[in-house]
Length: 488
Image 1 (cartoon, one colour):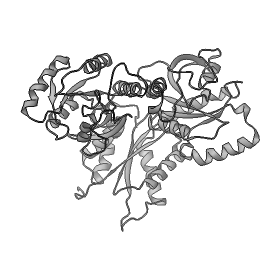
Image 2: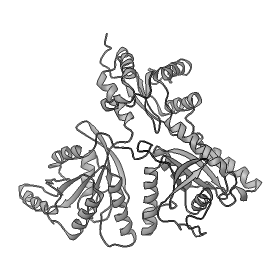
Image 3: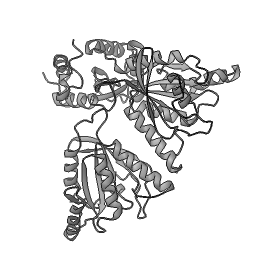
């Protein structure tokens, strides 16, 4: 079958070509699945991440209350005093059958220092990373100087904006809301986040602003060099590594942790191929409590990951693998990027530390055994020639695809040799499946019942054993057949 035919992507086929999708639908119909169920599952998996909606505004205008209203449960922290939300917090929401992510942010204020600057920075990054924005203004107070400053920020970002005039509890408040036309962001939508008044109409506008599926900012669709993000906690040698691969001092190197603040893009030729390396500032723990500059650094690291195709995670072999290291690796995996683990300062390792390091790797990094590993020294250049092959291996796994026929033969063998455990007198079974997308590989399994997390991990492990996928996370979603009788 022709795996390169992706014309079906517009029709909810994921990355399946029309011919392969038609054959797949025959299997689905035999197992009692409706066409819309299959198209919905493949469309979600094939399009990658959900659209992102950022909720921004100055402190105490009711952003978290609105988020709770949108997601349909009381989860975001709300209090009457300003500044309760500091971290960017992401939730999944659904409206009118469309799924999207909602990012709750801390209040945005201009010309502030310290932790307040961190909150403002985090809100700015949320806007940068979002597909659309809900700008919340207190209709009773009206537009303030800070609101005007947020409008300038939103205009620079160029994202679609839905203006929410909050705290409108009755008809009298709608007159206050009308004054917000002066902000120049279009129609103000009068809402009471607390009571739910007007939120449905506002969410209808949100769906118009959000894309059906977000464009992926990584990958090779736009051409140009492959993008590599160097990430890791402070002072693990990211800048030294970049200087080593570049063959010259391109960035500042200092023993003081956190010298690098901004990502530095460098075009570097290695092995006859030009790569774009992004050297990022180290990620610190509890960044929301750090000084403003460090907070910006962590956000820019996240932004570099967003633009990258592969993340090279540097780990200092002289220190125990820390919670920070694990958190950074998790960031890379959850962002869906290819991953390479580079153990730096290997030239300084003695036999005793090497013994304990191997034990730490076996104990703490079992979930990323699939990531290629290189033992390097940015200072001496040891084993630097192994870095590019590891990156190429990870990218190949990231882009690899299994034909539907071969995948289903493999799934049939798994079901026969290692069936799902019986639970409550029932034994769920994988009926069929397909790979709906790449970068990273995304699979949809159609089953007769709920598949436990342990069994999904088993399927992932067997997928890797059978088809490789070295250096890439794998995403598996399961669609369960509804009880409505089999169609003849």
